Image (cartoon, rainbow, N blue to C red; front, top):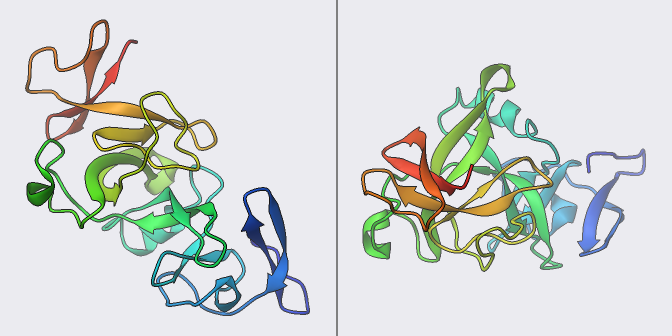
Length: 198
């Protein structure tokens, strides 16, 4: 998604099954936009109000942004809605820290329509790290793909990019919080885990 030619065009998603060469701007990460035409090659205009975010197609796509911030906050590959087409696209989003995974909406510390969850990011030497962040609550259920739709509240989008699915978060301080035969696998973050049958 980063190619550009001498005429100032860039490849952008224009529908759920199509991409084409369109005008390219010069806005980069975090800068306001009205459409993709405002963003530099490799970036897309997402959300409302629009903001330019970098496309991510591999596990390490967002590492450079995390490194530039000295890994605080991290960037992670997420799903966001392109401003003009309303198509979901994969872009690098900034971590919004939280740690109340099992609290009510008011206590989670996340904005309306978001919940505290776990996502995968990549740090120095491209090692995988799991980070807590506020993320949009979607409709994808347990075991369903979260590549084009966010997970329901209480689930984490987990796995390699292109094959991520919604996995149930669990409270590691509670006995048997997962439905048998799954067990709560500790992921090293404030007692939180992911229900797994492995």
